[in-house]
Each structure stands twice: as C-alpha cells, then as structure tokens.
Image 1 (cartoon, rainbow, N blue to C red):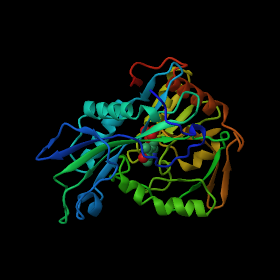
Image 2 (image 1 turned 135 degrees about the vertical axis):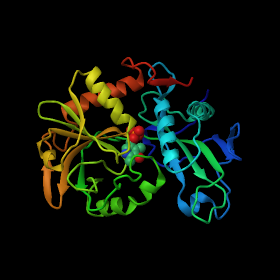
Image 3 (image 1 turned 90 degrees about the vertical axis):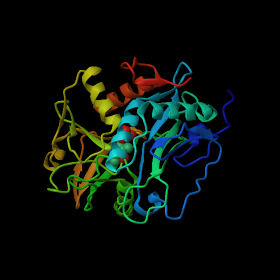
Image 4 (image 1 turned 180 degrees about the vertical axis):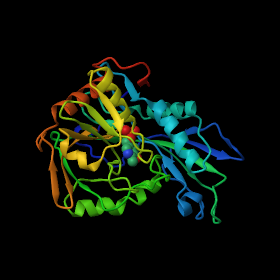
Length: 341
Ligand SMILES: *Cc1c(COP(=O)(O)O)cnc(C)c1O
C-alpha cells in the first residue's frame, strides 16, 4: 500500500481529512449494520439532541506502525468499555464493545495510507464518538444516535525534544462529586475551556484541578491523569471517583509494577504532599507521559528535583518501557496490541 506523501515529522495536532470514516445509526431501538463512507460532513436537524443538550461522548486512541511493519492499536478493548460507561451515564444506548473494536479496525484499514511510517514519531489519531441526532427540545435523551469513527494523522508530541511543563493550581473546578468527571464527554471539555485559556494567558501550560469538595486533594488536568514518583521511587497516582480513568495511566502503573519492579499506590494524594515528590508526569494517549517540572499555587512554586530540562529518571524509564511495548521492541502483555494488518 502506497503511503500518502505527508511531512510526517512536522505534522502538528490538527484535523487532516482522511479517505474513509465509519458510521452506524441507532433508530427504533437498534443499531444498523454500519458502513465506511466518504463524506466527512454530517447533516442533522437544527434541533438535534447533541446541539441543544450536549448529549455526546467520545474516545481517543492511536494507530501506528511497529518496528516489524505492522499497523497496531493499543488496548482498544478498554476504549470500547470506557465508551459503554460514558454512554450509560448520559442515557445513551451502548455501542457493543466488539463492534467498537471492529469499527476502529475497519476505519484504520481503510485509511492505512495515512498511518505514519515507523520511526517518524507520528501516529494516526482515532476518534470514535457518538451523539444524539434527532430533534430534542423538551429535556430528555434523544431517541436516535449516530456512532462514528474518523482518523487524522498527527505529528510527534515532543517535537524538538521533551520539555517539562509548568502547571498551575486552578481556581476552577473540573468535576463535581457524583458528577460526570469519570466519563469521556464533550461537556467536561466545554466547561474546561475558560480555565485553560485563563491558565495559558497567565503563562502556564496546564491546570492542576483539586477535588471540588475539599480542595485539598489532587485530581487531574483537563485531559491527563497525574503520576508521581516518591523520593524512595514508589509510583503514586491519585485515586478518585471523579477523574477519568486514563488507559495510559493504568498501563503505566502495570508497567511500573510488572516490568520495572516498582511499588505502586493508587490513593488519595493531598496537595500538601506534592512538594515532597521527586518527579511528576501527566499521562494520556497524546504524549504517553509529559513531565511536569513546576507546579504553581497562587505564586507559590513547587519545583521538582527532576528540573526543567529533561524527564526525571523514573518517568523516563516508564516512558521508554511503555513506548517500547507499543512499538514492538519489548514484549507486550497478552492482549495489549491489536494488530490491524
Ligand atoms: C482522555 C482523557 C485522559 C487520558 O486518557 P487516556 O485513555 O490515557 O488517553 C485523561 N483525562 C481526561 C479528562 C481525559 O478526557
């Protein structure tokens, strides 16, 4: 298969239209068979449920080329089951998990010419999503839904080397107790836009959100989970029912324990103890781990010993091991890599 002639190494993170997308419609209580189509545009009624009451959920994942030339995705079964949880919380019908994985495979195969070559650092970003499409004006769940998957090639996350970032403790809240912080839904992002624009305007890369009930515990950023390394080299990640369960973070915790032999803890992390950690990173599909060099809380700075020049040693090991597994240099645990072709 002939690859598209794209400047892989210099792609950013922006939408680039690819050839095919997958669509399945839900009507009269059931999903249709689904198909790959050409048209990237969606025509819907002006009163569609998603437009009025934001009934939509999504997933984010990547396909890439391994060293031996296969196209793979990473743990798509976990994206499928997370989308089930998201859909249920917004009173949407469940898109069956096996069909989700099949739709991803079909869409990536149909756009294989856009999967960046091994070694470029670029990947094919995959966006499965689902939304209420029939007219809804009284507040209630839609009756008809559309499930879609599109792909878009994206460049290497760390262009020109890894640079630790500076984050600030946000004055805004991300998730209410018993709210929707644990699901992957556009609504959590819409309300985070003001907070991130404010953080950027103040010179910070990201927000650290604290638990909104007590404002004493670390939750996550707008789109990535925290992972900390203690001075005695334990891996600690916040436990909370209001953070989004990152697949990358769960995979890194497994790698820490089973590949690197480190002690791991998922527990309450109080903001007061952040100053005592040796390293800090943000985990998500986009970067795998993005190192944090500094946390600023209303002018008070916490600088991690790992500094502002490079990843700390333990986060670097975690990063190298997980990306090694993803790229096929290191043997993956059973079921982690889904070979597409
Ligand atoms: C998607 C997302 C993450 C990262 O999850 P991954 O499965 O690792 O990509 C973290 N936090 C939020 C709020 C998210 O939406």
